[in-house]
Image 1: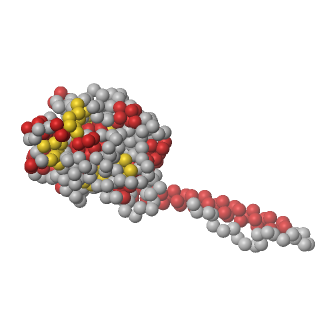
Image 2: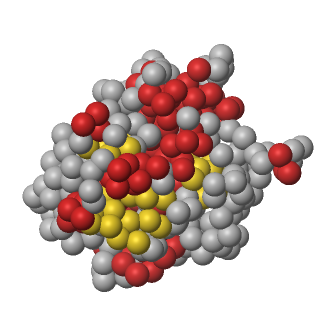
Image 3: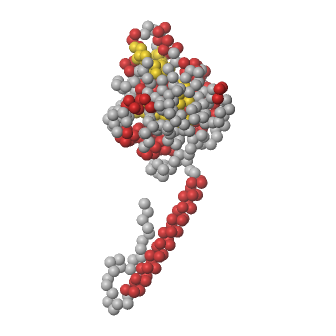
Length: 408
């Protein structure tokens, strides 16, 4: 899978305009960047900030790496790890803007007096854990391995929200799916892009069970024409004509489900900060319960294949009185198929699954018992028959009873 394919289907921001920070005359010209962030107005970000800024929450951005020296991100980006080369940090990216753009939508804090200039993210106090994965020119199998490794690393290094503004319709891989389930078992929220092909076709990793798949809407709340759709879509968020931070301390505008994914990850960070005792599923439940559809779709059966449960409303999710509900919320229970599930003592217990496993265990051991008894009977017959000769040949097994069956 090449980078070109990844950027197209995962929602890489289509570069429409690049503005050099050095060429802006503060404060008026710099303010124009903030003025063009229509999503902040749509979210009423000023009111949101009074409730939560995402303090104490780490969001992993599994992407191309992040430029942590950008004025709008300084202090909010952790060193991370470069999975492209297998080691080194990922917070000094100078070759690709995509990860920096996503980080700015999540945790950008602006710059200048009062931080009124530059890009403001929806969760400006959250920390970004940049994890650089190799998706440029490599085989899909190897790319998936790195993404799977990055997901596990993110969870093991304190990330409670994982942003995957990447994917492909042919990206399905068992290792990545297992890594997603590992994240779910560790109570992390995994958010991924629905894709930018405008087709009813599953995009991965967005379509793995337990992942929050995100579509893109424009300023009017209508679904973007290139946003992928299907039964797996859960939420939608602004994904059209967004200003973001870029390389060399610049800015660009673009469209894609990558952007909408970043906004949902930021909203999840706001909620995790405000409600630290809620599970990942209960956080997603607040986003789902407060999501909204355009008035023209009133009465539509949910989830809608384009919007899911609707576009997010972070302020409502933070302030409305919503029962916590079940620990998994609208998400399926974490799968126990991951190799880590059995060894993880913190994995939530499922009484029904436990009973089924016990019953299956009894049946298996019952069958084994019957086989063993049958084997013993055959051995007894053979031994009796072999005792009839005057001088029986020595047995290589002596007279030991067969041991218990091997346990794998």
